[in-house]
Image (tube, rainbow, N blue to C red; front, side):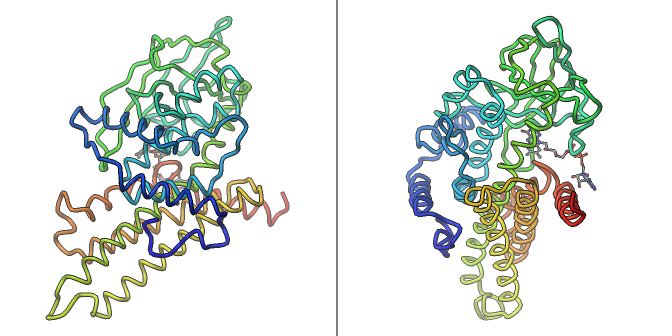
Amino acid sequence: MSASWKLWELPFFDRWHKDLAVQVTSWLASRSHNAGSDGFIAECRGIVRDLGDAGLLRYVVPEGSESYDLRSICLLREALTYEHALLDGMFAMQGIGTIGIRQFGSEEQKERYLPGCRRGTRVAAFALTEPEAGSDVASLATTATRDGDHFIINGEKTLISNAGFADHYVVVARTGEAPRSRGLSAFIVDAETPGVSAGEQMEFIAKHPGGSIKFTDCRVPACAMLGAPGQGFTVAMAAFDIFRPSVGAAAVGLAQRAMHETLKRVTTRQLFGKPMCELQSVQMTLADMAADIDTAALTVYRAGWSHDVLGKRGSYAPSMAKLVGSEAAGRVVDRAVQLSGGMGVTQGNLIEQLYREARPMRIYEGASEVQKQIIARSMLAEYLGK
Ligand SMILES: Cc1cc2nc3c(=O)[nH]c(=O)nc-3n(C[C@H](O)[C@H](O)[C@H](O)COP(=O)(O)OP(=O)(O)OC[C@H]3O[C@@H](n4cnc5c(N)ncnc54)[C@H](O)[C@@H]3O)c2cc1C
């Protein structure tokens, strides 16, 4: 791993995690970066193919009945983000866009969609957010209306990663069995289905593919539904239980990179006649950054261990890992900018890039406020014995 401390020596890990960390680190070192001479979409597709060729996508799209090893996913996300957040984004989306199929799909659906996503020859996407409904998932307005042995989908999704070049979308729409979250269902919609249209790519502050998708009288067979009618919210939440803690891991990787770059800077930059790192207040800042990174890493890997080894489910640990990791990365990278001085806010500087990459982490897959609400509700439910 990129970190100077050896994560796998923590009691949270098994022997194979060290091998995996070594494998991904050497893959990253040997990978030639093709920064989009054929355009950004080709670059993103190329990353997915490379991840598939390297055998890494099997951790987010496990074979057959293999379960998700959350610690492996976290280790990989940490290492990929240390290198570049875009690598991590493409890796994570293959999992987020397939977990509903793995956990709620029929054998036929699994056979049709999963092998290609695991090999990296198909690109997956997950379409939940709408222009008027993000954090409040229960208020989604996209409808799926039954018409014989089909459903007809109408509505718009926005901020959807991989929009416009994904091969399929897992779409959550209102089928109306009950009010709010109990009236939603999930569907697999092939990108080429008539009635599916993607808008222009959105320009995010950091390099990331995404945009809006419109569904206009989009007819899908009833067998495209994942799970039962009314189970859409459950399908969406299942994705979050695995991928929220791993956002925390990606944040740890990013924060470690910021720390690494900062150490380079403060040991070489002269300030008032001596290296910056000799100033006590700079040392205090380094210690604050390290405390944030350690706390975040321990929270993330505790969540992984509790999922993999104790078999614990529930939202407390995933939400805590996402909250602590993403907030820590925000503070760490902000301090890294400060210690970089003016160069830290110039375009093209790595610290400036990390600053932009860290910011969305506190918003996507549930904003920090949403995570706090989940944590508090979970504690209160336990305290009140519900
Ligand atoms: C880079 C990126 C990639 C994304 N990819 C996808 C994707 O692939 N698929 C997908 O479906 N969506 C995706 N999203 C959307 C993302 O999940 C939403 O942006 C997120 O859930 C927040 O929803 P919103 O943007 O509608 O903000 P809103 O719901 O309008 O919330 C705005 C703000 O309100 C605050 N807030 C929210 N809830 C509460 C609360 N309970 N109490 C107090 N304050 C609160 C938070 O500060 C929040 O940021 C992506 C977003 C980004 C930035």
